[in-house]
Length: 338
Ligand code: NAP
Image (cartoon, rainbow, N blue to C red; front, top):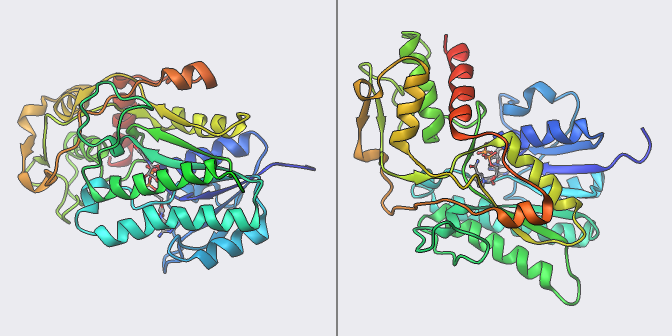
């Protein structure tokens, strides 16, 4: 097909990268992405579509690998989704987080400016940048006050993106999506929602072998229980396929901007667990144990977003609500951990 638009995605093997690739392939794009070279040649969530996309081996640590990929592929659109994306884990690897999630994003902006200055860029910003906000719900005007190294790195990348956009000499089209938590069956097992749905499935199916490991290397279900941290943490959970759609919409707009992307619905971790166990016909209280190992040293939240600007300017609204999201994840994990 002549004149297909070209999209380059960092973090293509992640949750969002894989859904976004599928969306763009459906729209007729040529899609390429960065995969970190590893011994197992694992394309993660992009495994199913690996034959339809172009793979570049690279790492956000390496500005050269970014430059070589951009020189060769010459994308019209760049989606910078790569990051060390766990806020909890970022306390244990502060420098790595800053180098990949913060400085790595700057490498992408700077190399793009030199090599494909007309390319439109999407930067994956995050609601975590709000930290423990005084304003509820949060919108594009809410001050940032990051409470973990991941959020601090993302705030740095966000501010560099806004600076590049406002540069009077050579402005770049960089839009930032301030996305609130979004989940799916492809969410990493180190995130609380997926940990819960995988644990429910292992318990319901009485699975003894191949139980996945948690953030500290223990089986997520041990002695019939799953260990969680702060049950009262409040988050706004959406469905990842709904959220990648707005990434694309941001780059179709005439001018770059920042957009809060959220459902506007807030739930606690306890409510998520309650709902997830209930979908499988179980009572959460019999299976959940609180373990302070999983409580971060500095608390974030309550996080709940007001995405009325995204609705007004881009015509975007979330389609999938909390209960349906939990159902989708539980049904998928019941089949996966059968
Ligand atoms: P994810 O599943 O954790 O995916 C992260 C991706 O980044 C993976 O493909 C990973 O590759 C890649 N990566 C990590 N370190 C890298 C490096 N040094 N060089 C190149 N690639 C590297 O994250 P996600 O949930 O899809 O989120 C996508 C983006 O949105 C992330 O930037 C995340 O921080 C941000 N975000 C996510 C949410 C959410 O709720 N999901 C909310 C707001 C913002 P490997 O497979 O090799 O590890």
